[in-house]
Every structure is written in C-alpha cells, then in structure tokens.
Length: 77
Image (tube, rainbow, N blue to C red):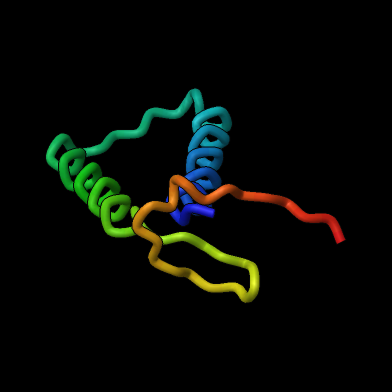
C-alpha cells in the first residue's frame, strides 16, 4: 500500500473530525506561515512518493518506482 495513502488518509480524517468538533472556534494563523506549511506538506509528499508499505512476506517499507501498477489484495485466513 502506498505510504502517502497509508499516512495521509488518517490525517485527512483527523482534520475533518477536528474541523467538525471545533467548527465554532476561530483559528488565527500568521499569513507568512501558510507558504511554510504548504512547503512542508508538499515536500514531504514528494519525498515519500515512491515508498510503499509491504506486509507480505514481511512488514517493511520499500521503494517502488511504479507502484501504481501494484494491485492491493486482502486475503482471508
């Protein structure tokens, strides 16, 4: 499974949950910090774009250049 998806999806869901819980609150962020935060998020995504999490035959993080062609399958025991 793609490491970006494995890490990114729970973070997106947490962000949605936090925005629902704190919908009435006002969050102030300095205008100069937006480019910095965007750069960190985009830079991290760029660095881990070729990393995949493999759980068979053993758990590991591997670098796969064309991981879009990998088919994720769930096997029953």
